[in-house]
Image (cartoon, rainbow, N blue to C red; front, side, top):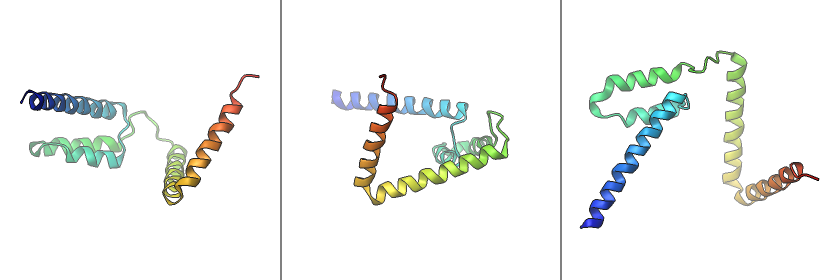
Amino acid sequence: MSSTSKDNDDLKILQQEAAELEESRKRNGHVGKGDAEHLVRGVPAGGADQAEGAAQDTDKPEDGVDDPAFHDITSQLETYIKEIEEAAMERPTLALLTTFALGIIVGHLFTRK
């Protein structure tokens, strides 16, 4: 029975650490719109008002970046990343070989000769 209580204690510690990490991510502005929906679902039933506030807070840029060009670049970057992920899912062997080759190239670029 002691292992069950130890497991429960470990689970509580992990849940507390996860909650702290989520809070730090929210404070640092690393929460996107999809992440905000995930965090809102994790709010207890009595915290509906807090959930609305959390969703509204993520819409405002916290770092003061209101430049439309910045938003264009980030949307393009998101598109490229999604395309790369899809290609890696379709052809995992090619993705592995490409990653390995890129690692070799970057390694040669940064070697001291």
